[in-house]
Length: 464
Image 1: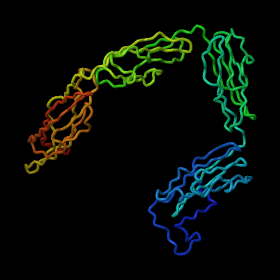
Image 2: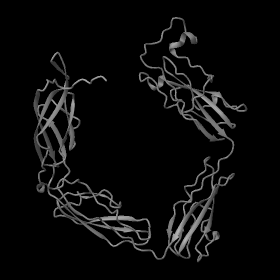
Image 3: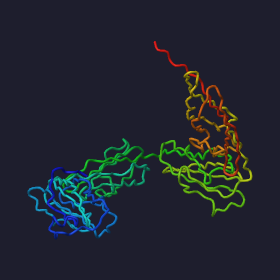
Image 4: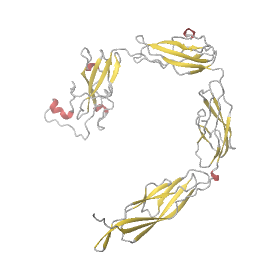
């Protein structure tokens, strides 16, 4: 959106609150209103060709929530039009109403059209906001798109796709395809193309190699720049290779669904591949209505299982010509009863010594406070025999100390500032607990932190 400075809108919106100055009777008063004045937002500037219908957008204007939609008016006006234009406010499709947030008009000559928007409610009106519409006379050229590159086969038609081509003004298009280059062994030329002049022509390759095709389109006035695509024809295609992963044992706390991986699959020719996963075998009692893939055609699908035990999966991959041999992978899903308890390790009992500076006057010592202190605690020595992911929870049992975080293996406990005495150890003991848990079982470890606050004399610096 572009604000135009020093422009005066031709339209004047008279709010109820200003009736006296707009022709209302003396003594009229506006209703009570605690709302902010409306704010007009005339939308973004646009550049379009002559003949295009212009749709304005004031929908981002803000109004008071106290007024229903029919109590708000959007009033648009032309502040400036090209000198030879006959467009005026009457050319707008809708104006001065609660539904006029998106009016439209059709410019009649090239140039700049500057419009002002005011938004009013029963009490007041916004200041105007401006938008510039620039109309160009030259027809914009169309854009050719001959589609994606293709893999072809000798003697089999390869169909091209130019349906992505377009004209900015929406004009009807004319298609002109060409054969830009072919393998030395080929006799294919532009005249060999089928359905020339349509969005979807085809060629029938006559030998192996790379065929380069071009497309230009016309809107009746201008031709597009050419777009190129290829048909890669191979008779010596090599089969792709499926790799379904290593498999292994998943503990009872493993995520369900879990994710398979076919990322190591490959095609020796670099061709694009499709994937097909399936279940080869499942534990006794598994229900096909309950288990399955979220999408068995993706490289790494998620699989939901309903029984602990041995699950075997198969992956096959295909290029445009051949399908790989299947690759088998087996996972053993742990039962809930097989889960073993984790072990919490909060790091052992520890002593925290904090010192405060003391000074003396007439042999009387005065000490500052021991400052607030953060002390690191490390529970990363906790473990789980099944390799399950652990969750952590730290707490200080008296509730008088805080942590910088309670759910991470390593955290900081915060000791508040405390009074100090000269060469006196003021000690406090705090019991800290760390609890760790896997999906079903938990363990905790408690340690004692001995906090010592001690005042130490600091001699004053001597002047030199």
